[in-house]
Length: 453
Image 1 (cartoon, rainbow, N blue to C red):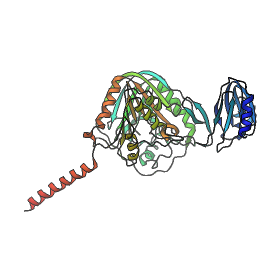
Image 2 (cartoon, rainbow, N blue to C red):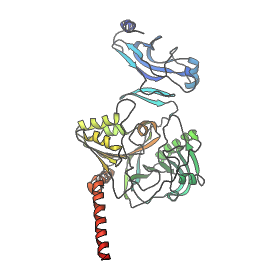
Image 3 (cartoon, one colour):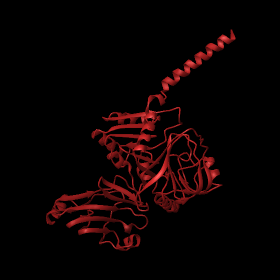
Image 4 (cartoon, helix red, strand yellow):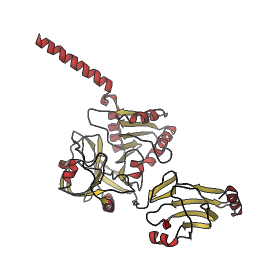
């Protein structure tokens, strides 16, 4: 369809109407006839895919085939006859004062439903769940690792992988990722012979990366893969509401059970002395990617925002929303500190963050822990702790978990943890370490020579 035709259509629409394209499903699982577009008009509008035109009023579903749509979604569409390209194309909804256009070429995959949000266009897979966040007032503890911590009782455990048998005492059923990066640890393979294990894999989730446990009404959410040698966070509390939610997630995700992937090598584990705080507070638990609290947390920061993560990869499907959110916070006058692990891959992103006014980024390495593995945010009376790495997999394509704790005591505790790791006294400078080692060697040689004289 050319622009002359679109202009003529525009002229015949009744005045003062508004319209939006709400959802687009161009490449369904199974029958292509189930593809559809969902639109809304407060008057009479015209939808076109460039080949056929449909006059719509109110909310309407326009499908390729009514029967195929009915079989998949359980109700009949309002219209049929569209033909959408899997690789992306322009579609239009035309009303009096605007033309709404959409093209899904930014991310193309089978089973993806694109939908409009307040922030713009987003997407989900057809088979993804839609668990809503759960709020409750709870009593619990936060433990900072490295630490001694053993899970005791009978219940369920979810993790990316597990390696340390001594960290479990009781009878547990596990769900783990079938193909973690680096392969399944040998220790996990051995554990799978003792406990009931389910290995999960799906086309629609990049990884099953969450880490939680449920024992009765007791819930444990952690940033760690049930080993405690890295700087990480364990949140341990009691809540029937959250326990019910996570049990439902656990058994829902069993539909992705698959064969165990490749076993490859061993992952060492260690323990240490941790920090702990007890708390009573309102919390909110999110199952990701069904709901994602990260961007709202950043956007709602007012005075300061501290972010700790192993790494940040700003690559996204369109734009760089995580960097944009941090930059927007800085423009509001928020003091932002971003603490990353001492990886070479963090050099460029740290340089990028340090170029933003009011933002300071630092890579840390400490004698107190192997690596910074925790993912948490601290700001203005609340703390967000999540299993999600700060990239497009963790924030969009992985199965993850997050808990927001609304409490000034917890905020102060986590703020102090952050600042202690941030301070130079905990940071090992590579050049300084080499110089120090050189002095040690020289002193040792000096005394050896004196002894041999």
